Length: 173
Image: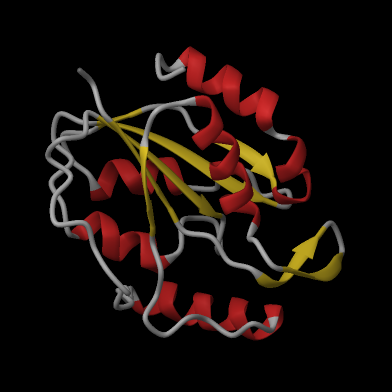
């Protein structure tokens, strides 16, 4: 039987919502992942940095930009022992400077995704998927990287319908 893993990076604290800053207790990506967990049978893994970015949005984006420029691979709190049992990996993340956060790169670098299907989902406030799909293909040679689903972070609470449709189109729901 095919098994699915939802691996996600999400950031709470101060976030940007269509021109304004707002403090949130649960990050937008995690809100979308919580919708998915109600729709499909999947294991989840939260990608968490040992030294998280600042809770202040403007400082966070500066830190994320520096990590991207340096090709950093932030140390994570934990890592799955293996992903061998999974056929499909739903990879969910916010758009940081046009791609996925470098903590996601740390996760991707630790596994061989050959023969696996990767479904990217990217929360954003207008920048869509950016180059993240191409970047995932480059980081995961041999994986079948499907068309991703961009979700406006400010609409995360109302994203269940779009997520269900996308999962269905990809044979997961």
